Length: 502
Image (tube, rainbow, N blue to C red; front, side, top):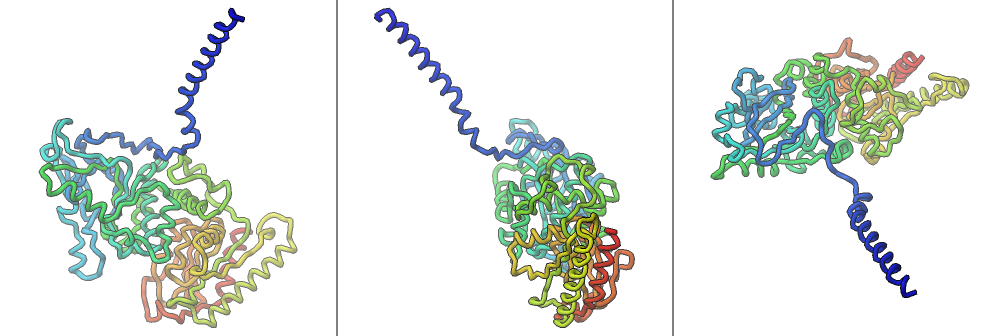
């Protein structure tokens, strides 16, 4: 026994040492097994690897530009002015097509002139001037990189605080342009959005859909508002050290600049049209809006919509040519957005007749389904009618209804903004009811821009892109006595669905 004790002790010591070593090695791994990494995915094509304090004043280049929409590579900000560093300023677009003073828009000559940009909004520096101001050598450079990819929305709260203008115009236009600028590669992730002229509440609409939509589609996005922009301004002004912020990649969106373009200013008054139609013309976007689906699908997922076809988030590396042109829904769903509790609404009797006609249409079609049950095609799909007052539903409920809607119907205006959440099926359409003689491009262009059919209705007459009316706002346009012929609407819907599915 006396001879075994030292051997046993030695074995125990070795075992103890081994256990201690294993615990030391494995201990750092334990927390990592349960911690979710929030590190933003690196972009392959828009990579900002420059480090704080080591940024050279690289010359500014434009990745893509149309009026009101510009993606810059290496642009700088000092004292609130965006600086383009270049030896050839004449090679850049006129600044009035890139930016403005950011003032609220009015139609007076004085206001139009006041929104024209000055050198305080955007200016040029030669590389030598930039080096003289911000340092020439790495040791003395006073340029700090704001890492990642930035969207700078240079719009006033005048339009930001509306669901349509924020989501269906600004975000649609920005995401389209970001996709086109990256073409043929997938769009890189967006790290921040800056609203230099808006407070924290200024970009949020009253129902709260702007915040809901932005957080659902881009959950990791950092938002900066006017006081944050002012922090950046003050950090580069009234100091003994002349310094600048450097944005490796920045998308500048400017509403006033977009209205100086031909498409928006002269044709349809939709800022996103400069982005979408402009890049379709350059073959950098497809015309069926497959580029929009990752954003829309992210909102669907957030609202609880399920399905394997919505598994791709914005920025994922799935090429558009791999996405089916048309989508499918399990049922044929008509959604009528009733505005009967708001200022702009149908004649009460016309509303009642419209609902009755839609109910009769759905009942008749479902009777046909019962006769052909088990067969393929339109005969086998159930028809559904939703008559909804959006204000009575939760946001999640509204999104889920939109995600299944084939035909969206309602009086012209903000109630139709959910068209940006519709699937693009072979029969998808938006039916917009106007006071006879009146018309606006808002939802007509947006529907077509997202690959949906649009019908404008004057009582019992409809118009499509082949005979679009001229913009006009007659007396009664925003009123409470808008007429509509229910049987004509039901007949139009039946023709649209049966013709395209048969």
